[in-house]
Image 1 (tube, rainbow, N blue to C red):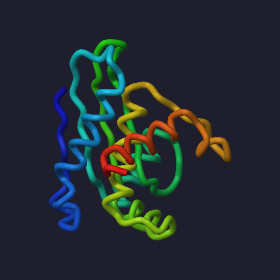
Image 2 (image 1 turned 135 degrees about the vertical axis):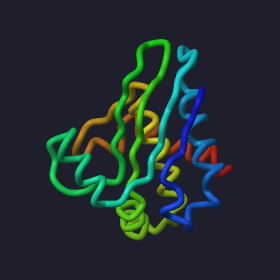
Image 3 (image 1 turned 90 degrees about the horizontal axis):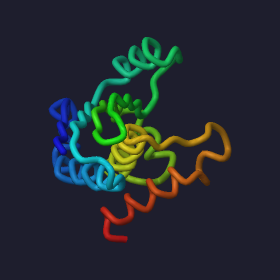
Length: 144
């Protein structure tokens, strides 16, 4: 699997998280044993860029923390994950976690979407199978 990480130069506070972000994506891709090959691109973008993507592709207003696009098939993955670190930082503050932890959570979340997982909207989101897998993968990265 090939994983690209783009836009990190815009967020120097995340430079030390490069290896962890790549490891998060690769371990998440590894949750689907049917995937034989693929390419994943993770791009960090500004809130303005995320607002534009959200409007153009999802017909939603405003920024969000992560958007994922899957272009793969049952045997391969091809996808893009976009993360807005400024939005993630605000969310991290509200959750009482540091920015790096929240970014890793979003890398995992977006990658899970790319490999075919989904979650309901609303109150059942945090108890969904995808959310539980996301948090399990995050804990395994952090050695918890």
